[in-house]
Image (cartoon, rainbow, N blue to C red; front, side, top):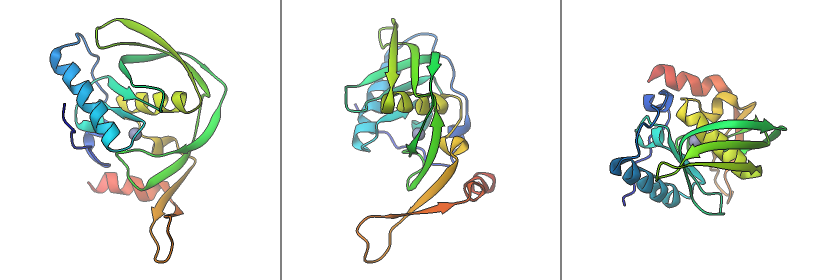
Length: 176
Ligand SMILES: [Zn+2]
């Protein structure tokens, strides 16, 4: 296993739609293990393959209840709505409020190529939906109602969240 470099916004691979996985190969399994290691090393709760430069439909999530690897995930059911703060390992120092369905039922394949279903709510549901977005080239800043930049200030222990204009971010993408 190896930690892979995390691609940072506005890297174009973050905007690519991931290919459907046709077969779970050794190479794909290695990628999944590397992604888990990369996620843990970065103190993340989820990571999608495009974030390590591979535009395939593979993602890992661990919100503190164990690691789940999702291949070709699809959302079967959504219920409720919930607004909470999100961040992303590919967009460090940026957070935002994102409204999403509060509960989801997701079907995917595991590393043996077997289908499984997950019913998720709370942070787990949010993390799963955030990662599925990555597989479609969608980032949380696209969905955020308000976006903040964490700013370190002299004399302050914790970073201060300063609201920014979404266009400020998107200009970075255009200028790339
Ligand atoms: Zn992300």
